[in-house]
Image (cartoon, rainbow, N blue to C red; front, side, top):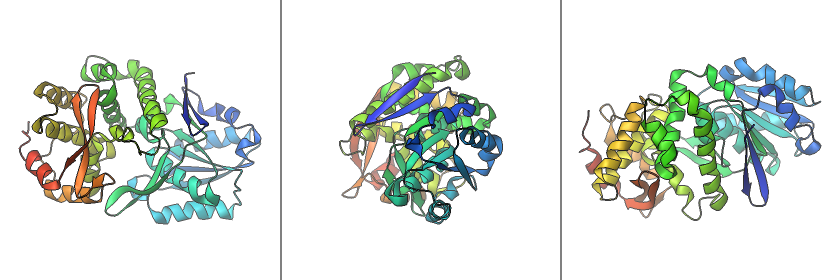
Length: 357
């Protein structure tokens, strides 16, 4: 059972990989996690795994209150956040108790935000059940809800007490859900790891047989970044935004057409092309990134995107400084440059020349 410890501000957040859901109670036996647990999930995930987790927690004497939300990005809003906090209060969840999220990135994002502000902070445990959440959303302590004009514009940095990954939950994911996680893994390869990228680029290499390595290495990259720059004050954590600046704009402007992973895949190709056009990367680097995305059967085309409309949403991006958007652009495989300032007009002009295939 691999364990990766993330050390932030004197605290340790263990990430347990390859643990059965039925054993999660063993990690919460102590009084550290209080007597009550609010189990937050969505209806799809709860139907599959909710009772197993409830029974595991109850077997250690925990009183479990479950709350089940509608699945999907549309749930990440203030109305649902208020409902979660209200459920905590109605069930007398105390400051010593725990909010546990069971699901994908939407659930951990909104659940973590609720845990961070209810009673000024209660225990928070993440049980991610999608590949995207296991390699990215559940790691690093970012929590948030969306606004109509942009993703994740209101939130906190709040590290979980621990992250608990049962890789068998991936067996029930749809093809599209698995693809979303692959996009994030390609991102890690581009920003920091030639080994990851080589596997993702070579379509003869089976994902399933390499998955534990890809997951562990991706989490280790994020661990290193988060430990050095938890709250994105030093500029290092910006590297994790590769593909997301353009991707988030596409995702929210064309919602619900593109999933997060699909939008990020398109964003990586677009931002790599911007890098090529402004002279940061060479043609070979752009081609390799585009072909890796294409080879893993992820979206990469701008054909059906209203680019002018999508780019307007960049004006609300957290990385806007003095009217310019700070991009993360690949230099070569395993290395990126951060804080590259471009205005929306420049971006639009460049992307209009992106050749379609």
